[in-house]
Image (cartoon, rainbow, N blue to C red; front, side, top):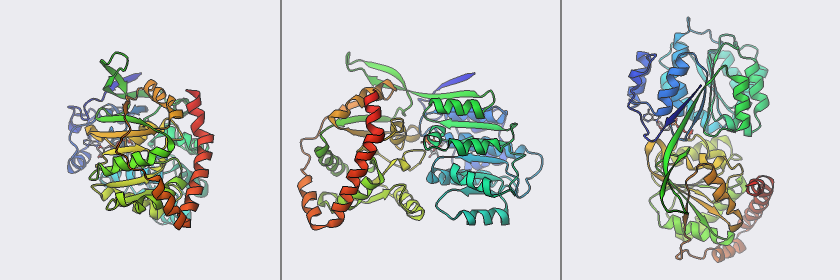
Length: 455
Ligand SMILES: Nc1ncnc2c1ncn2[C@@H]1O[C@H](COP(=O)(O)OP(=O)(O)OP(=O)(O)O)[C@@H](O)[C@H]1O
């Protein structure tokens, strides 16, 4: 069974209060309090299914409202269970690939969970002492686990006290990423401890064979929900407008800019200085690259007055959280990051996504660009390509990504001599530059080239 939905409109005309089976009053009140009245297409399709005890495999565009599509039915299913859970009875689990995404889901879910009596949620992510989590669970209990697979698996291995026999629902968010990150073993082990008679929802913005396998192994007769945006795409050969199915939001304008490696920085600076009031996310290939640009960019006089914030997976957890909170609160500024910030993060008001380096995994492209143009808003994205990476354009177009060429700016300043002279004076720049270069070459060899060459 399969439902294919057109997500051209961010919201449908279906109110949450119109859904069948009906949602409970406390959930409707929590939705109203948060300003949500009408469902997005993925919510209109998925909430009734999960609430009717069906498993779902959902393939939906970025920023289409997947989080509420699983949080609302999860809370409804828990409300229906006969008695309030005992302190160590786990009734629901939500697994997502990164700490940031798990924390975000936890925050979105909190007001809905608080409508349930005696259901204690627990955030389980790395970066904090596992012993602290264990103590908290022992002392206070946990009925809903939200977290990353590594920590969740660790807790399950170490703690016999948790009882999963009455578990109602398992949600796997960003399923393809969970598998890409090598969490197959942990996920299988987690699933093997859960009762078979449960509901399972598998959410992903990209479908892969591994996701299909996981869906076969973990879901029972799932209903497939696909949400595609219809976009106008410029057909180069005929210059006519064509309609194409795309998983990128329809308010998103995506361009590629082709230039040699030594011109990329100048083009970037030109773009940033011409858009001073905008909010940018710039993706680099490795953590070491982010560290390098983090010391170099603030030294450029043309970027004086810009707020630059870095975020990558090798930073300490507290620093990661602080960086994300600071960038979220800005109305304009620049986030320099790796793919740790590619998926699921719902940062308000991002105007433009720059992919300075291509992603190591080609599927991550649509997740990166999906940090803007969320929920029917407008946004733009620019991917920098070196001439040898040109094949990537066709690769993306074949996957339904509408992409237009952007010409290099003639006004771009020559930045390289400035960096050279700064590096001569500061060993830190030199060292970080070398480290970035080595990490970049390694990543390029291991991941990047392989998919360019495969196209
Ligand atoms: N029914 C709704 N009405 C209005 N706003 C909504 C609705 N549902 C979700 N939103 C808002 O839309 C934004 C995107 O939602 P969400 O983060 O769940 O998207 P997503 O599909 O999980 O995206 P990604 O694929 O990037 O993870 C959030 O800011 C959320 O508050």
